[in-house]
Image (cartoon, rainbow, N blue to C red; front, side):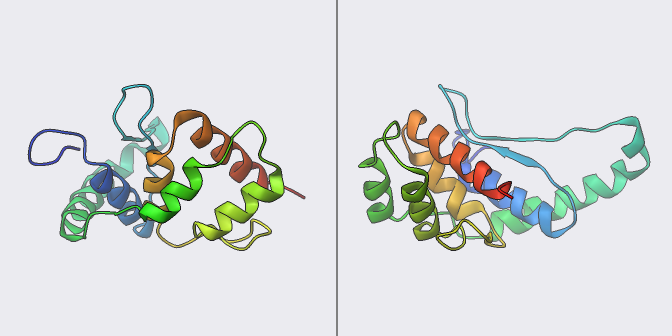
Length: 145
């Protein structure tokens, strides 16, 4: 998904993922990495062959809805705060506090916003090692028992 000049459009990619989720589909947003642009990953199997028409209709609607939304803007203060973090020395508690501040639930790691575009745009703006560390800690917080 590209913007008017042909460049990858992170906002559009992330908004389409949110719009599809609201329609009952999950397209996995993949953030930019090592020169690769942001994109959406979707797996189709023989078990979904009878749903391709519905998928395409929902994708068309999601794309139209996403194009009507304002672009995602990363709060510069939040980005500056995150860029000041040292990924290799962060404690799980510090990561949980930052993720809560960024809108990912409470300091104990519980809860997600209904739309992930703003959170994922912030992660996409971060240096690769910090992005990797925050994602790993966030995923770990979701599966703690």
